[in-house]
Length: 64
Image (cartoon, rainbow, N blue to C red):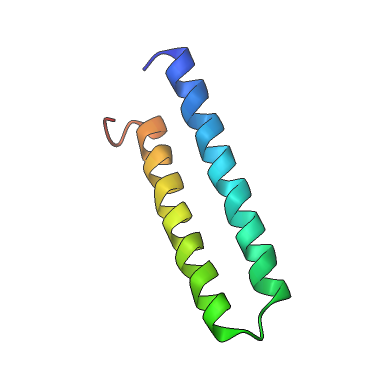
């Protein structure tokens, strides 16, 4: 994997984790709304999966 591709993947992973942090903050602020809580959890899980996949590529576990 070349340096530019590695940089882009790291940047993409960082952006995904920042989005996840925003959802987590929203989830905390609106914890009383069960529907909203479940929706944000679903989004956070999807972002976690994407970030994990990118981490796997960076570690050489998977090919893109």
